Length: 313
Image 1 (spheres, rainbow, N blue to C red):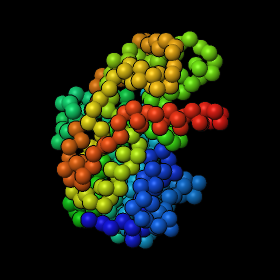
Image 2 (image 1 turned 135 degrees about the horizontal axis):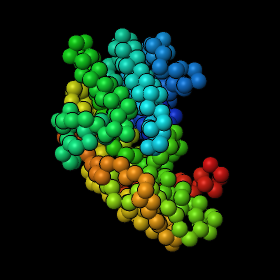
Image 3 (image 1 turned 180 degrees about the vertical axis):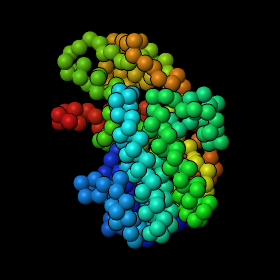
Image 4 (image 1 turned 60 degrees about the vertical axis):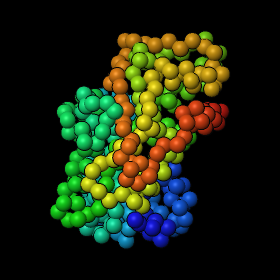
């Protein structure tokens, strides 16, 4: 157990979508503002070993959230950038943290690290059961290599590095990546209401199902892991339930009072038909369970997006 309130904590990506909520959760734990470091790319490019050594000096805990990702088109057009940036940042930061005596290092992994045909719901022991989905391969392999690094560093150096496998997030906050499905649906409906359009078109058939977690719940998971988890095995962070994209769109339309037609462009790809994590290990190991009901989380997300939309953001 690490008592966080008297520790110096580095949150990479701490000004981003998940990171801002992690910082809020740390403050709620009593961590003073002066003890929370949030490096910015303008001053510390984490692809640089020197920058990583600088930001980890004197730090007790690292929560590594910085990275790049996006929608399917972004992954198709930028696989080299996605691979290099995500892998290099993680590798250099973890090595610098080890060299500087950091006590715990928590990395954000991804549900896409699981093999495309792994049994559902995904369980941590199946992460090496086969090849990953081709579209996200560059991103997924880069993230999985950080799990390998964490386990290797623990085995050789006794370095306390842990790896959390994140499902799809949603909630209030400015998203630095393109393609968050829930935000996209909300924005399409807001635009249609503004333009008095009678319908919107969404990609695919609407049939695929996904596991979504409210961003504030996800942030709590990272703080709990930083406090209480110290084992080599990765841990799933998910809601434990799945919903089809079609049902999701219908729920959002109801909450927004959108009465237009939702049509589906089946010429566009669906992606994997199902993705869902088994979240049991997180509850057993450090007491985390997602607590925000979907409709409650969606209401907060819609309210935030409506405010942003009204302000021209």
